[in-house]
Image (cartoon, rainbow, N blue to C red; front, side, top):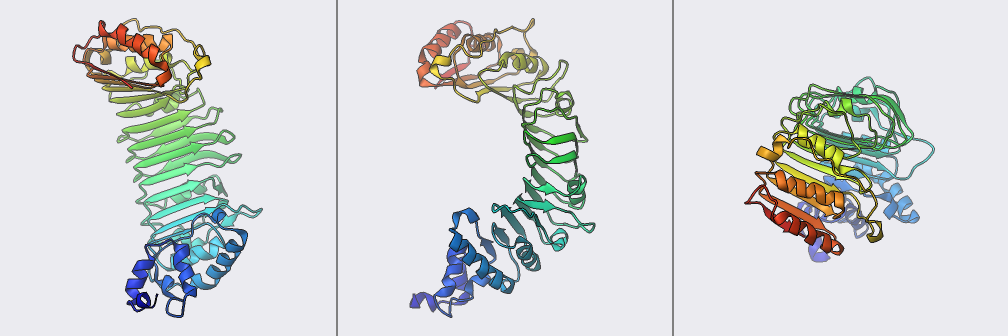
Length: 412
């Protein structure tokens, strides 16, 4: 230890930067030489407070309350905290020109945490991640000119317009993730951000939402996980660059939502997302259908085959495996389209079925695609090894009835 202590301060601080912050802070008790070295670290991550024992938690909390305001690094690259007085610590972070701030509240109390007003005018902040028992009470004065990434998970919003007031003052925001809190009531969820490129939205099962409004002219990727059974209108407009979408929902009233994403090239969607006829996905090249074994895959599949004339890749993914004695569960008949969809005749090149179950309707769908897809290059079926007999059956039925002579079949 004496030999290490003889190294220059900047070398010792560099060494400390490679160990967990908790370990770096603990070196302060080694000697006077080490007492303040951790205070020069530019990255502080105190992790999940649930990993600390009660005595460790209280001890570290007192230590940081006493020492963190004296931190010596002029600039903090990142600061992650999950314990103590987050308001006071956030003030310290802002005073050190923080670039990345992560606040997670896992120790819930009757009183919600409120962020300091200085955080909302932090010019250096590039990444902000908030999680847990925090009340987002956005002040009148907001200016986050450098913020590019914003993650808000399970917060409580003081007013209906709090979120949009915050977003409207983030001129370079590129990524937004919002996970709404169970039992909350937002009214209208509004995102109007011209610079936004990626948006992820998670809506819990018990949540009151009147409407969703999204206006983002730079939006390229949209992820939606909506577990709420109540229908709520969707207004997604001015998204000419939207190319990727992931839609997993429970509500069946999705005409307004589906009508807003018909320009995408890459789409992953669950079969619960049923919608009416007449939607055309002229730009869609790659489609992934997520389905539960008890759901009718064929209905949604036919609509997409008929409405996606330029589809090149198709993937079906079962979201759960049937037990062997449940092989008759979810029996649906395959109703072939009256005419062969354009994409099967001219564009479909790759077909993949993950967690293939080998039921009669599954085999009918697979055989139909292989029999009609003229440009198909590869067809891959991934199944439980206990379903080998069904794989052998589809192998025999497809060898003599493939529209594409160059199509390679793969069974895993």
